[in-house]
Amino acid sequence: MESSAYVLEFEKPLRELSRQLNELRQRSIETNVDLSSEVRGMELKIEATRKEIYSSLSSWQKVQIARHPRRPYALDYINAICEGFQEFHGDRQFRDDRAIIGGTAFLEGEAVMIVAQQKGRDPKERIARNFGMPQPEGYRKALRLMRLAEKFRLPVLTFIDTPGAFPGIESEARHVSEAIAVNLREMAMLRTPTISVVVGEGGSGGALGIGVTDRVLILENSYYSVISPEGCAAILWKDGSAAPKAAEALKLSADNLEKLGVVDEVIPEPSGGAHNDPAQAAGALRYAVLKHLNDLRALDSTRLLATRHERFRHLGVFEEAGVVRS
Picture 1 (tube, one colour):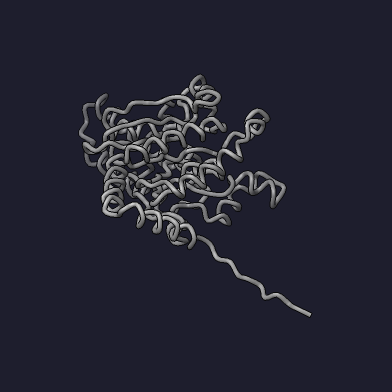
Picture 2 (picture 1 turned 90 degrees about the vertical axis):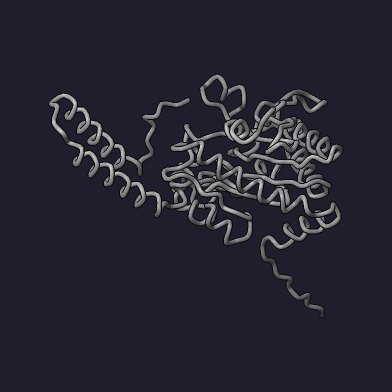
């Protein structure tokens, strides 16, 4: 895991206050002077500053938290909320893509199928998992496991955390766009309950390739977008430094997505982000998933499909222009 010293730009006031708090405690020990009231005052100041900072985050700052190197990844949540996770490998066509993991597990004693995008903690694992950017075989593996879940009537739980599908030449040569498109179609028709949770980055079709589900949940400081802020800035402003402006325009933050109906629930995070208290974040995620899973299990397959189709048909707004005839 990355060093706990990693600090985002907007968190620097908290780091300075924490440094002062540590100095007070050290001085109290060295001089044998009771500084408990000063220590308590500094602790209250840190808490107040933390609340002030995290209650008014911009969309770009939330993107930075979503990318925090100490943020819990899919496997962290799987190990925290599930038991007996058994990973399956390979797409039965080309090879195993480690950017997408999947397999069976037990959630509160009930069997589920897990499909997740997984980043790496250290340089070696990041390279092995391609920085969480799946290739076509990853999406084909995901679909293989979803069809297996449908066969045995297992609910499907997906964890979204990717900057996007891998855009390299080999990935394109093996038809990554087609693999994602097939997943969109097949997930729309899957006859078993499905839930996806955006736990970090939700970038472009790479995220949507495992996100066409009955319910879409998102952690408070995660994002879900058709393109990264940097990519949007490069296209619209020809300048990657315009990423903060792009993040605001894209409405990619969890609160905006809930207002637009793109996600069904925003899962609250601990103050300062999920990386500050992974256990609390996992508990909130477990509660939300179980709540929605219980609702979906009450629906028969016909109603399940009809509700899923209606959900996605109502996303977005369009108008039909009248045809002018001579």
